[in-house]
Image (cartoon, rainbow, N blue to C red; front, side, top):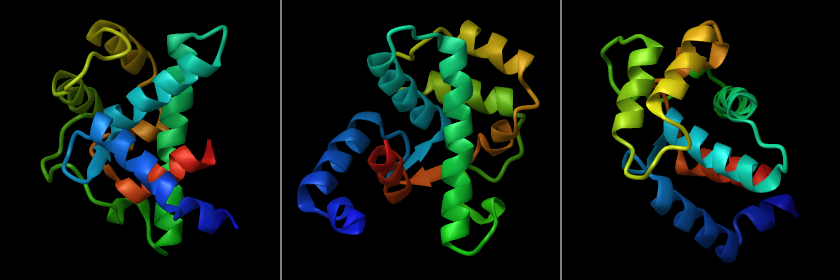
Length: 144
């Protein structure tokens, strides 16, 4: 029944509208695009919204979605498509992604940087250069 709802034309249409609004790479969502959607959803749903708590939650959701995608494909997270092959530190990658947003971020680059520097060991940051497919993004929206 859940599978039928997920593939229903109306839900698929909703996913297409969301992905068009926040798509940063053709056919995929990068970490900051995913986090920005996640933060906006949390801000709309929580009366006591806090950027730092929500960012921590969004990073955990990013990691969980990548793990679920890897499990579904019977592989490891490392086999999921990356943004680029060059190795960059996660803070630089996030800064690049923030600067390439086609819409205003939920917080300033400085606020993001402060959080990332204070939480640079967060496991999800190891995957800042990965991309989530439209189906993976749709699954996240569906699970909400």
